[in-house]
Length: 415
Image (cartoon, rainbow, N blue to C red; front, side, top):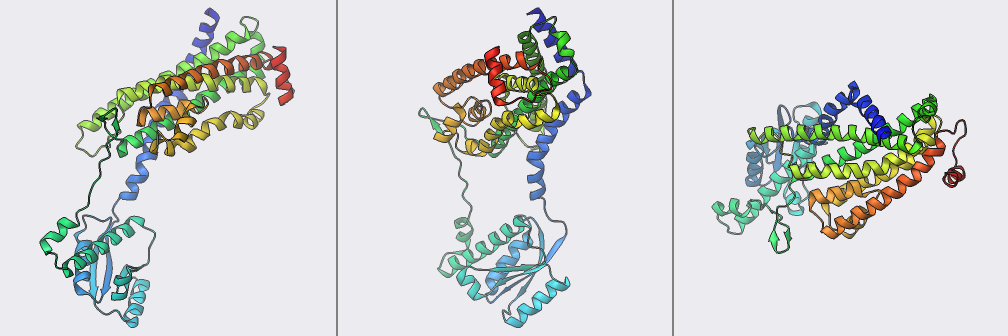
């Protein structure tokens, strides 16, 4: 234990004292936050300036209703200046196309009687890639046609707006006869964010173990160290030291999340509420430890097997691929955490650290599933670490020979 403690302390201090540790500790949460919220924020930003468009329709009432909704500007992503045109002939359409091409108009909505009857309306414009604008125009036109149709069927104008008022559905999961809170949009994002953080930390610190082993092997420092400690002690100290550095970084992220979560609650509603609680952060620690111990053994064995960084890059695909599968499944599991596919995939030990954690965040699964998952994880961790320690014991002193699968099987037999 003394030797393991010394190696642990060296590996831990060697990492937490570096500038890269400090930079990654600060930048990774900012990067993840920006990756989640910045695209949606940019997508929802209103278009600068005023767009000049024309609404062409035989029905003046519908055209005026569409124009008034677009000029209101509170529901759509752009501000509009709208001209109402009653001529729906071919010459007028050609004239409008010419005005759009010359820049006199930004676009025109073709609302002829045939288009209204078939519900097939055309919007001609110079720029048509803005999907938020398309959704706004579709909403305004649909609402105007619905109001006209209801009024023509004798519905009082004062009742039309209440009839067309949008209905909001609040989903409430029921468990054991009791209603519980549902997963909001921000909680969905927080689950995705925490799962991605777990994925990145497992890869980064697993590869850190591999590079540490490879560096000491290629520099022959390993031979000196093995004169004082056993291979098992060396491997255990490296894994625990790097894992402690990872836990330190996660603890700092938890503090940052708590500080910004509190600041967001105090803010005037403009700050996004992530829905990250103390429970979700506390659950991150055991799942990180389980995943790290499982994958760090594989990365340590890989570092002991190869002789160069190039060889390591060729082999690390096989170690990293089991971590990629949960990321592919992430959206499905968040949407349907109790589906059979989600349940069985979260039971696979190599996927469990991420997928079971996501299920716990979104909607806590039955305790027997969590217990079975933990049992399978512990058994797999013991088996993987036992096998990897045997590969590590032989591989760290093997130089100049490219490892093959039959060769690795021999190492397992020899050790």
